[in-house]
Length: 307
Image (cartoon, rainbow, N blue to C red; front, top):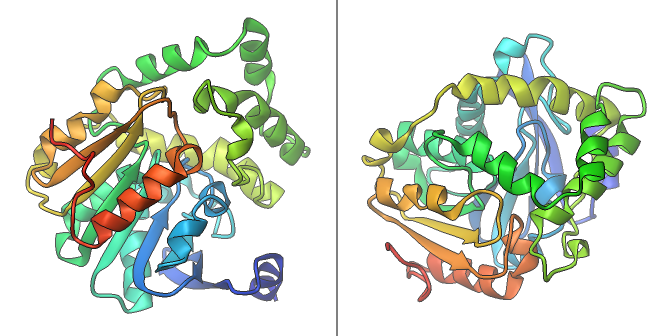
């Protein structure tokens, strides 16, 4: 019944289901479109596919796009034991999804935190990855990322906005309203100054209230905490999967840190987008989606560089 209700809430052409991923966890996934398979890995951690899906329409016109909610969020299981929310569990879930779908090779499209899962998956299962596309990725090495990101984000907010955002608690019965107020404050600084935040059509607060609460209060700290002082650069040097990175020059994630993906990976290139921030697929769709299509046809976009 739960799956049927979920299906009714979505577009009629969207197939939705859950499957057993192990550890007593069921993962929610959905498919839209036809063509080569592309698995979408949303950010967060602790969010869900709704944070991306409404802005990926152009991809669905040419490909079989597979969305899934990571464990600890959205329509997937919310494990009472937070020890089941590590990066290793997320990587194993992605492999379980591939096997469940019966796919030998997959393309991974990942946003924000999502590339952490995609990269770890490619390190462990390189034979199953055809291409990877990273949109506004966190860096492959922690370094001073937390400090730099926080500093850049805070400069785009007023003191009153910072104070209000810090006051808001997701550990409340009124979590959906809190979520919407929080993102009304925190979405604008994640979009380029010259672009209206309304270009982002995806809903960051569409999950059921219990999933919103769990994702932000349990999954997010547990998964991020499991990364420790991360540095994947040595392992990435062994990954030869073609990887296209698209990153905006106004993203609070510093470009210099994102550049480390292409210095670490032998077959990665980056498209640096001007006047673009954390949602390049929504802010610059006429650049981003043609670049992705060129890449998936086996060519590099002209603007992609190793430098």
